Length: 79
Image 1 (tube, rainbow, N blue to C red):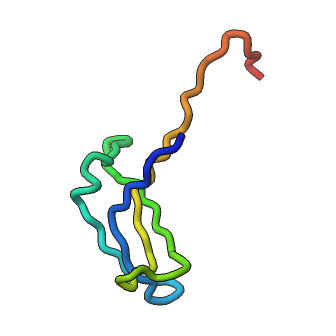
Image 2: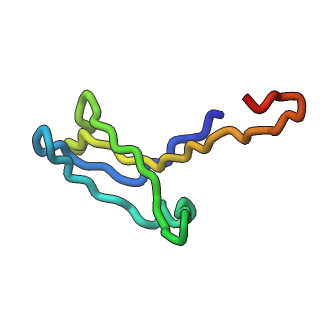
């Protein structure tokens, strides 16, 4: 499954334990999920090896991974 990366923000690594990021909410609207009545969005936050032209060394993208559907096979044994 080769889906295009959906970048929705960026930022800077301030120190080893602090990433400062900015998110564009317009890019997230269609990726809101619901589970047990709660709404959420899964994101990937990655530290880049080199800063970009604006000095940003953190990228934020939507996590679009979904598990493959499992098909029931009547010939499978239950153990």
